[in-house]
Image (cartoon, rainbow over all chains, first blue to last red; front, side):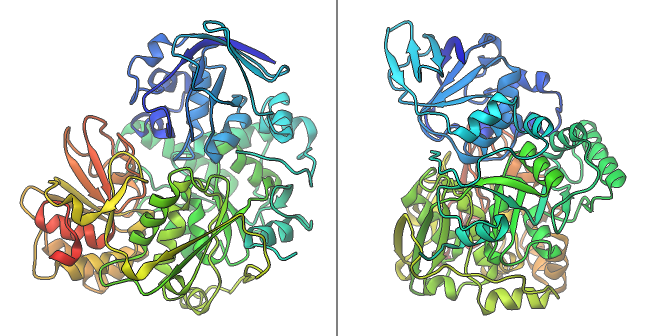
Length: 176
Length: 417
């Protein structure tokens, strides 16, 4: 799997919580993800929804997606066109929810990626390639469980397709 | 090798002799969802052809984040949830019942030894009842309701010991802020956190709920407390059975151990806009506040209201300050009325609002103005959290510190009033 797009960065870089991704001002009353997408990241970048293009990639530091369990956060990012998030680490609930709804999360060192750089995530090669700087960064392998969910099109599709959880019980996996 | 509480609960629920790091598919006892997360769950359940929950103790829907409804749009979201609950015969806790994390334990649906999930990040609160519970997204909760089970990665455990008697006007909230200040906002990501020590042994169940509630603020997955006479009394007083009490084995493998001395703890505050920006309340003397908020699933229980009322006795809310009080549940509200605590707070100048989440999540009943400071007993102080992102600062503190600050109009160490 490969994703290419323009990198978006934010301030703060660490601890970007799900309230920042989609504020409670909207998420309680708007149930349509395309409508919610118009307000994604608004509290830390009011222009984000206007400038994000289909396929773009969010780049951040540690603990991306911390806070509230709102699944509107990964869903609204995806509805806004975001193809993947690349960060140093993720909060647990956001991590599961993103793969559940088909938004891949990539873990790697992100310090050298600048806002506006054209980047490619190559899951098969295990690299994030920054076309602007020519630098490639190794990514942490996506755990097998998350790969299965992603390949099946998310958790609900996984259950529909397989009739049950088709995960390998007893596998030992490192997450975060 | 011995097992931690997380390993025991996941082993018992998956029929496997599992240890930290392993993936298991475990049966889930109970699941719940609230009005901000239910519609996505309902869509997924409809997609799956759901008829009834397969979790052993069923599921519940709670209308708490926007109750009573602040707008027609939200009212229609509630209508959709109500219709689903009626069609599928799912118990629904209606407007005014209170915050899910107080309502669920009171309902007896989560008991010692249980594995519970909820579409709300603070579902870890039930850890106070010697259970393993965690917050998840709506798709995961839908999967749990539909299949009666869910996959989990068995978490590593952090053991946190707190020794010593908490000083006067210093409580569970201060201890938890101290812990989070040291471990930081992602310091326990993916971990199960087990508290022990004599500070915990002598802590009320309300205090344990406060601490378990905030475990997710440092990234934790579970926060199971031990089972003791306080847990047992809490259940008995409510006519609830003891469940399947469990404890950590002495030779269980803990990834990290931390120790805290509670005897020299002082009232603490988390400054805007992150829960781990912790400092002594006294160091913020002179920081003016315009609103004080007492409530939430962290500190909206009867003992929290009592602590604030005791401190406010014979005093009143400073002019220029709004003190908003939201009891965590209808039961808490009734108890506060019957014991006179609600009346004491109202006489002191507090505004009593309906049991629920409202002000904490910025949906209604206390949205601050531009440029204001709020001192709050909640668990989150993200920018914009209370419904206004324009230069609003949220300071998190204990009920005593919130009450003291409401009296003086500035952030105040409750030992100084």
